[in-house]
Length: 314
Image 1 (cartoon, one colour):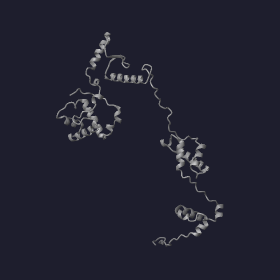
Image 2 (image 1 turned 135 degrees about the horizontal axis):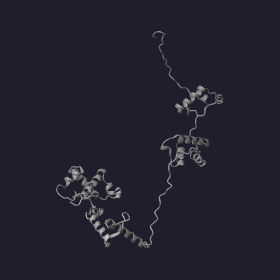
Image 3 (image 1 turned 180 degrees about the vertical axis):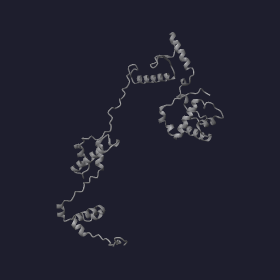
Image 4 (image 1 turned 45 degrees about the horizontal axis):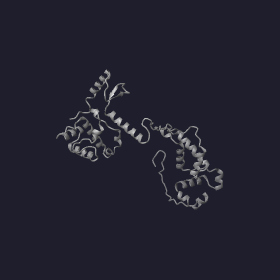
């Protein structure tokens, strides 16, 4: 069994890894469990009891474990025969499991005190203020720096003179949702747009709708009352409103001109509301002619109610 690791390296690019995204959620956890077992050294103890040990650790039976390993192997994450995670050694650094790292650090510090030069020692650490020993991490960083320098030279510049590319700064003018101002009035351009969008609405209708719009949003509470773009909210409001005008009350003079009584008017309005098909039969006729020409047959029936006597039953 290899030296167990208290931790292992996991990379943030896992969230976008196509192999992992091909797996179901439970199999992604199974893969992480196998990585943990690899770090503990369980998978390195090859033997006939290895499948049973792994199954017990993962809380599975051996047949289910075989299916899990098969699915992980199909996407190229583990070896189906040994259950070993592929590319483990290319992702984990040797210095993570080096038991002599502490001893080497003590020796390096002792040499630094006596003034002896030590090969493989970097400048003083910016964090601790002491000299540090080169590890695999430092080697990886040096390799990246060499690649960057080569690219700069290929581009025609010099590594020493090349200046890093300017990093675009994030925009600090992001919009925030706000409530409709208390003193809001309909801008002229908004009103003109509303009339062009809704030819069925007059200028007075648009002004009336603007008053309804303002009253609605001023009275509304909660986060829903805040909008990023109030002009877009106004456009959607105009598109959705029905544009119908409230029915005007009939004056006494109008009743005299039409010859329509209050009862006839109420019956006409009721007919137009409940039976619009009847009202459409004579749209040009006056109300009086309309009711004279229409006959509504209603079957008569007699409703008898028992008469009660005072002090006794009917």
